Image (tube, rainbow, N blue to C red; front, side, top):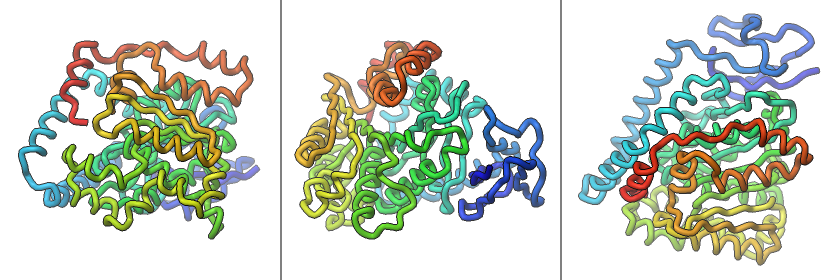
Length: 420
């Protein structure tokens, strides 16, 4: 039997085009800086599957130095766009206080991210800096044909990073679901078309390679949060439009069982002034979106309403939209308007509004509280619909009860000072 082995950081980095065919009936080979060496027993497999090697400490330090240099350079470029004004100084101070209040949870999740044997960081999926890697979160007792979530994190199109998905990745992995957190270029390294291209390339990797990690390629779900929800929905719609025209795509919309959008913005034309008033100034946002003339092309709601896209829209999977009614960063009407547009075109849509929840409650504060997480339970329930009742119940029984990671008073105070 032959599979295509995904190349993962740990030896010599190679783009996906250099992936080798590995014959599992013979001794598998792994690339190293010196060429080819044989796989050792400690690197052999995870539940019978080929798994990536861990990077050496020296390689970790080199990678961290490269990222630090890149981020420092991009920060200086970004500061030229933003300027140093009163509003941004206040936003920065609020962000620092917000992060400090949630730090007890961040430390625990960070420890899991860096030291858990179930997390495989920086799996290579592309060739460009920052868009070429994703993190994998694997269930402890994963079986073959495990459901998979491809996740695109938020970050105002400026500070998105794959590690922001560690909390979601951990929670879903505990429920027997593989999670792939896909990185993408942020502004000013890239603009919106680059971000959508990166997301699509990462989704393609998941669709075509996840079976090598025990994932079920017929049970892939896409989740996006905030700016990531916008980017993911653009990637999904663009893919559907391509399939109705050009063809020759590397993945198919039919491979996505459902799309979950968390606190997303889907009509960018209507949000420009709102973002400007919130501190993401019009000039900067239009630079991110490649000019005012490009806004309709990156507004999923408008693309859905466009008559010429009717057939493409019919290809979309089930859509589930989550939003808090007290979200000040992106109003909940953004999800409602998209749901209305999709429903008018015959797409199966679930709109779930959380009364009194803010932009970050659904993704951060609620999971950090521990116990039952309504949003997570909804996602898991939809994914479990494709399993028999006995398997779903068994997974729920095996899943540990989520512990509280941050005291309640700190969560309440963090919500009040949040700059989001």
